[in-house]
Image 1 (cartoon, rainbow, N blue to C red):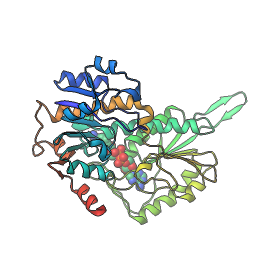
Image 2 (image 1 turned 60 degrees about the vertical axis):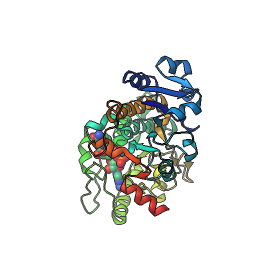
Image 3 (image 1 turned 90 degrees about the vertical axis):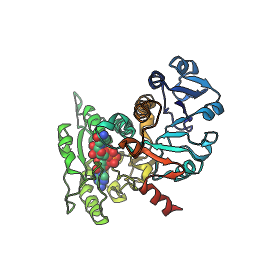
Image 4 (image 1 turned 45 degrees about the horizontal axis):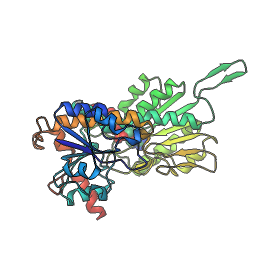
Amino acid sequence: MIVTALPSPPDERRLAVVPPAIERLSKLGHEVRLPTGYGAPLHLSDEVLSAAGATMVPPAEARKSAEIALVVTPPEPASLEGLQRGTFVVGFLDPFFALPTVRALAERGLRGMCVELMPRSTYAQKMDALSSQANLAGYAAVVLAAQRIDKVLPMMSTPAGTIAPARVFVLGVGVAGLQAIATAKRLGARVDAYDTRPVVAEQVRSLGARFVEFDLGIEVGQTEQGYAQALTDEQLERQRAQMAKVVAQSDVVITTAQVFGRAAPRLLDAAAIGGMKPGSVVVDLAASTGGNVEGSVAGQEVVTEGGVQILGLHPLAASVARDASLMYSANLTHLIEHAWPDGELRSASEDEVVDAVLLVDDGAVRHEAVRDQMEATA
Ligand code: NAD
């Protein structure tokens, strides 16, 4: 297959394909044709990309000849210009929110492979870009909070006195939350964590953190894919009321709670934030899907009147763009290797991975929940 990559938007430093992946794709018999200057966000020159096996060509030529076009973020409809009908656009397509992109793919006869829809199975882990990026985002959230907060994270005993460890509260213990807990523990903080899925309590404890229990009136389950079930308004209200005390005691709160395919649940309201000490830091990793925190703004840092910093920076994995690109391009390479074993696409009716990720094919959107969302917003 002839593989290219569409340039990332100016504020996105991650790349969909970097040298180890270029080498791997070339070894597998694919031809990687990249637009000149593609590596600039990571200071990778055309020479470095060529040495890895890529052919550097003018951007229009890269698009015209591509059979697969890799992306980091959902391409704006205008940036699909120049791709031939039938080309596969592969990467993060943000299927429930970037609906203009999904529509444009279908209308232009392009095919969309959406990595957010990857099954959460052991076999698919190597192709799971949501996990690889969430893992780095969890790390980056703690590092960011440690930079912004006006105290140290570990306990320090010094001749001048003893400094108490910072208290970090991680809300939502999926992939990002687990990495945030591990990173905060490594930096010496005292860590509390909570998730509606009780199955994660043991994992939290094994990282040396405390799992806080709240009574929501029912046991909350998880879907077959391992995702959280959405809470009712009444359950969310109970959760917010019980969390206020832990939040007020915390120097740093990191929220990662998501419910697949829906807006993120609102977990911290202005009253809870108002109970925190001035100088405290809240990192809202769900800011781009509506936010777990009242007052958080995607892509921005906000300081409340009470002096609490709410950081909605997104996507945080992009702050460690080199490693994020390494992981992401490896995920995409594994997907290509799986989906096109001998240059032929596996049939969606026979393959679980292709069936799950192939969002747009033959001018149609194949995923029912995405179709519903499109109809609801038409
Ligand atoms: P996610 O990003 O969808 O959500 C993050 C966390 O928020 C989840 O743990 C969820 O339970 C939690 N959450 C939702 N509503 C909440 C609320 N009201 N209060 C507190 N927490 C709330 O999750 P994810 O990181 O994508 O992981 C989802 C699941 O998939 C997990 O069980 C994870 O272990 C599993 N997983 C499996 C694989 C695999 O086997 N290939 C890979 C990745 C993740």
